[in-house]
Length: 398
Image (cartoon, rainbow, N blue to C red; front, side):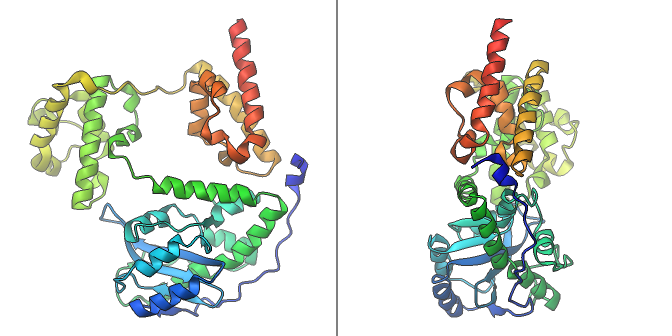
């Protein structure tokens, strides 16, 4: 297919949602949930959403599960359900597509509540991007664009653990899934017309694969801003501190920064305090942490510095001037292709991944990165690697 074929204009669909937002069934018994899970298992697709609270905890607490099928809308009370097996089996049923909009937080909630992820997944936010509607479009904006309906946002930050839920909360929750099936049917038609349905299926499968990987406690130090500035022994301390924080916040179930901020961990690793007086002088080390964990923190530093056999290598610094020039050249090509096929550039290759290409060009040319394989090979990979190869050859001549 030519690139011009991707540019076919779309007309506003006539499709309207059949369900009324105030029509829903409240599910708070194991028996009724079991019946419905058997019903949903015969559907080709169901729509999902969650409401949860995560203001004072490390883990999200599910307050409500919304499900829509071709017959109606169902609000499942997770606080009243103690038999999760029917939902777990439904989530694993690959004959039923699970439709979610912007799935990342919902997948985290499902991982915590059900310990299983819904497959196969269809993320309508991803699908909207692949039909040229826009990047990271919110659910309410997508509904308004496709159907002209306005979704209220008044209850976004309300208390979803209170019982009973207010009428406004219930209506808001129902509205969050009522349009997902019509959106799914509209977007799959558009994707099929552009021969991009498989692209979206692969992207959604990748989202599930990413969410399935256990969060590595030992690798959290890589997320700390400016960690590249640290020497190996300082980096070893930062790694140990981050690993300890990850374990502690999971045990006592509080947000990371509630225990100690990233900036404080960086300062400790950079300064390597030897006494509690030196520790309390550091930025963002609050008295509560100092009193409860000061001694443990200093002992951890001593233990790390006593054994230099496992110090990590220094992290890659930001791109230098020459690398930034190459990055800009490759990024311009990515943007050009993206605009030509009406696809957000970040779906072709993310900034972080493009920086890795620039940092390790020879390795990239020898072994095509995973992020440039699959459907991207016929869209961006060949031309991008051709530019990279030409640039490196010209560099070798000088």
